[in-house]
Image 1: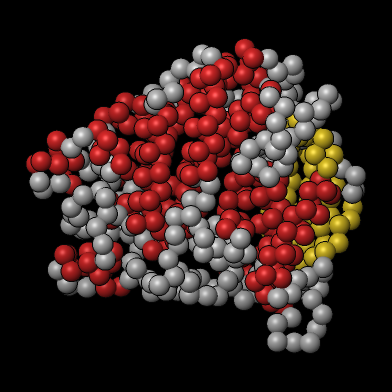
Image 2: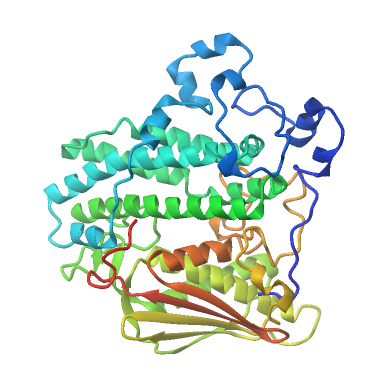
Amino acid sequence: MSSSIAMLGTSGVCDASMHAQATRDDARSSVFGRHCALGTHQPFPDQQTQSFKDTKPCRESELHKDPDTHRKSDTHRETEPSFYSEEVDRFAALDQQPVTLHHLLETCAPPLTRSKLLANAQFLARERPVRYAKRVKLFQRLPYIVNLNPHIHNVYQAYYANFIESQGFSRVETMEDEHKFISMLARQSKLLLDIMPQIARGFYECRHYFRPDDRRRFLDQLIKMRIGLRLLTSQHIALYDQFHAKLPVSALTKHAVLADPTHRHQGIIDNQLHVTDMVHICAQSVQAMCEMTFGDSPSFIVDGQTDVVFRYIPSHLDYMLTELLKNAFCASLKSVQDTENEIPPVVITVSKGDSRVAIRVRDQGGGIPSQIHDQVFDYSFTTTKHTSFDDPDNVVPSDGSNCVADANVISGLGFGLPMTKIYAEYFGGMLNIVSLEGYGCDAFLELPSIKLNRTPTIQI
C-alpha cells in the first residue's frame, strides 16, 4: 500500500456544474449527454444528497410523456425495463429461502446422485428470480439521478434481463430440463462477470448525489447479494460437471475440479486446499500484472507453516489473496520509485490454529499516513494517482476491456480492500490492516475452515 495516498479527482461526468443556476434541461445535457433507456428524463431531486432509502421508485407514468409507450409489446418491455414492474414487485415481496452453509455441504455430500442434482436445480430455479428481483428493487431505491448514470443503468438492465429469463425456469424435473438450465446459468453468470468496474465508475461519477454512508450500505448489500447467488450458482454448475465428470468445471472459476474417488472436491469446495500452492499461483499472477503495467515487479517469499491444508472455496481465497498482493506489490514498487534502491520483497506468512488459517502479507512500501488509515476500507478510496475516472474519453465499456487483463486490473478502482473484507467476513473470517508509517504494512487475513460442525448457522 503506497505511502502516498490520494482520493480520486473531483472533475468528471457528475461535476460542479450540477449545482449552478442553469436550467434543468441544460444540466441534464451537460451531465449525461445522452438519453437512457429508462424514458424521458425527469427533473433532478431538489435534495441531491437524499438517502436512497427515502427515494421511491418512479412509475411509468412519470417516466414517459407519450401515452402510446404504455402499449409497447412485452418484448420491448423486457429489453427496455422501466422503473415499475408488477412482476418484479411480486417476486421481490417473496421471502428469500434461507440456505445455511450446513445445508449446502449436506446437499453436495457424496455420493452425488441424479435426484440430489435435480432437487438442487429445482431449489435454485425457484430462488433465482426472487433474488434477482430483490436486487432490481435495491437499484430502484437509489436516487433517480443515480440510476440515470449509464454505467449503473447498464448493470440494472443486466440484472433485469436475468430476472426475466430466470422466470422461464420455474421447474427443472428432467435431465433435459437440467441441461437447458445449466446453459442459462453459465450464460447469465458470464454476463455479470465483470460488472464491478462499471459499478465503481458509476458510483464515482454520482458521488455527489447521496451520502457516503448510504453508498456504503448499498454497495455492501449488493456485493453480499452477488456473492451469495454466485456461490449457489457456481456450486450447482460444479456439481453438474462433477456428475458428468467434465473438466474444467465452469467459466466461474479457473480452478479445475477433478472427479477423483477421494471426493476432494464437493462442488466448488476444496476439502484439501493447499494454501501455499494458492499463494504461489496468486503471487506469480500479480507479478505478471506488475511486469505488464510497470515493467518490473518485487520478488516474494513464502514462510511459516507452508504445508497448511484446509477446507475452503478456492475462488474466494484466490480473489482475497490477489487483492492483498496487488496492494503490497504496488506499494513496494512505488517505495523505490525514482531511486536506485532495490525493490524490497513481499513476505507472505502462513499459519494454522485449531480451526482457522491465518495469512499475513507484509510489505515495505512506506505504510499508510495515520490521518487516512481509517479510509482504506471506503469504496472508491484508491492508492493510485491517476485521472482515468475524470477523463470523459476514458470510458469503461460493458465488457471491462479497458482494464488490465480484464478483472485483473492492477489498481485504481478503490473496491479491492472493501470487497476483500466482505469476502473474508462472509464465512466468519476477518481482515485487518496494520500500518507502520514510513516503513510498510501488514495485512492479516484470518479464515475459518469450512466444516459442518463449526459453521451451521451461516446463511448464503
